[in-house]
Length: 140
Image 1 (tube, rainbow, N blue to C red):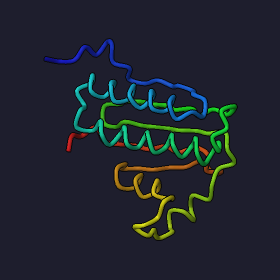
Image 2: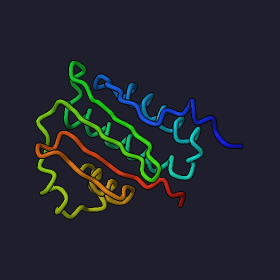
Image 3: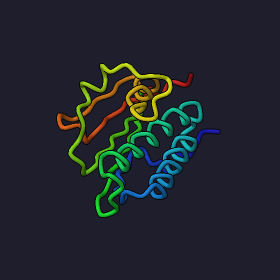
């Protein structure tokens, strides 16, 4: 049975405060949209990436300051799913972070590794407080 495409949010933007509970709710919304669109096969990857981006924005970008917000933009196209997460922090030196080698025992810095493993394309804005990820809709 074909999903009811009229009810599937092909894109949405949501701003949340820097609270983990709000990020969790947003991740569940993303999973629901993907499952409803018949994309259960990529739902894990997209939800994992969203969760990691939101956690980094809350914990590192906004330093858990609940007076600051995080914005997530989610879009499903014919071939790609795009996530964009922006925080109100100063950003980080993402170019240096991409070149850095990680220890398997590292307790931080795993986000950039996860992004490269699960997304086909990763981009940051110049200051490093916005990330864009593209994930193929192709089921693995």
